[in-house]
Image 1 (cartoon, rainbow, N blue to C red):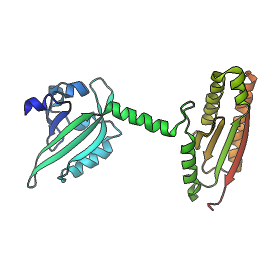
Image 2 (image 1 turned 90 degrees about the vertical axis):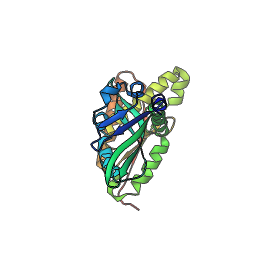
Image 3 (image 1 turned 30 degrees about the vertical axis):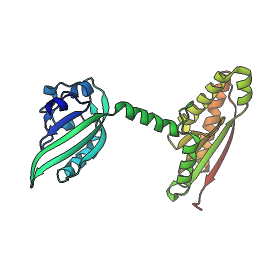
Image 4 (image 1 turned 45 degrees about the vertical axis):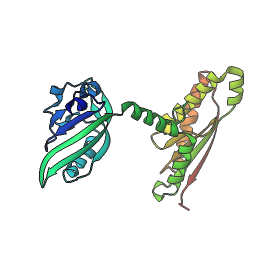
Length: 250
């Protein structure tokens, strides 16, 4: 059994009731870089990512009374100083009301998790500008406009004038640079106040909760000032901008 445990591609570990590691298989060195003697005797929670600790502290307080296998994904600190995603399955063994041992298995899922995060990112972001995409914009706009606590709710829609002609005459690299610059401009001016998205080939949208007509007008004026500065540097950028504000939920 020891030969099997020490050679499979996952980590087997045991902890006492204080979360101190009492046994860990040598595969820990391959996944997290620690030698066995460096891990045994440590509090398992020492190497948890700070963002994962609150939830897992709460979970551990209930796992002591559970007879189920608990499965969670979280990040552990490697010996090299970076965090790595793992999947943990743990079961607590009891003898009556007496705690015996917590025994778990750790799987390395870092590459899988990174790929999942990338797919999730691409599903709601525009690949060129890094802004949110149209599907995200429509979903959030629907969500926000049905809530009374977002009122007054304003939107800005902007089109880049002549982008097709710029692409045809100067090339798509120039056109793409204009799209990226426009996205950065909107994000810089209004990003902290709401949602900025690329909602079409040459179209951008902003959703601004708790923003009345005067406030949205100020945002547009800031955008226009930025454009004039860019034009003064011979930068090709011209926008058509429309705004609307909603005051009542219905």
